[in-house]
Length: 127
Image (cartoon, rainbow, N blue to C red):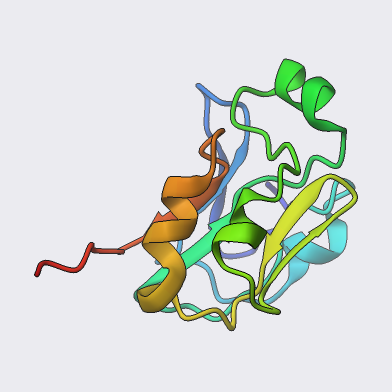
């Protein structure tokens, strides 16, 4: 937490995971460079976003045993949205920041059985 000169990092006491305060973050990358587990990635700040909130590369059962919301590499996201912006590698899904959150976000969030895929400011189309 001390690496951030802007006070943007804290630990969620309930989950024990780092949290970034987007209001304070300047995207300097200090957290990316120092984190031994590779938990951080500088992404463009968009109003609507979808991403995998997990970096655990353990295989499904082991990952799930260690974390109830771990990505288990099931590939449902890849099958739901078969485009280059969704990749499953080393038992872990990755959603590129280039993905169109309006077009694919809701479906990606809904298809994830562990809720490792998170959507920010996504709304279902009201028809």
